Length: 68
Image (cartoon, rainbow, N blue to C red; front, side, top):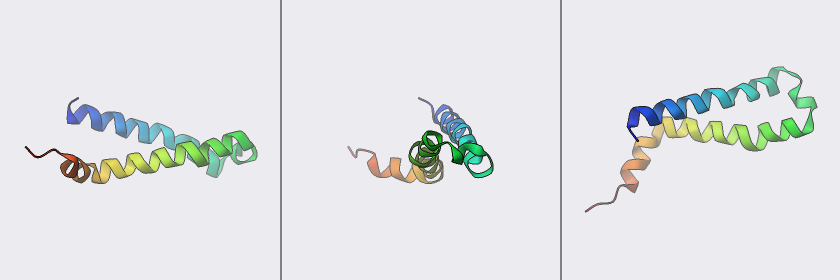
């Protein structure tokens, strides 16, 4: 996979999964326990990890690169 394609996929994943978090903060999602748990335990960690990957993923790839 090309680096540009990977960036686009991760960026869109980050943007789309941020929408339920906004609903949790500003909308009635917090009143619905299953939806609130999904936001807390699924969407928020994925958004955080994707943000960290976009920010510092190049360093992690460099460290995991196998030296020949």
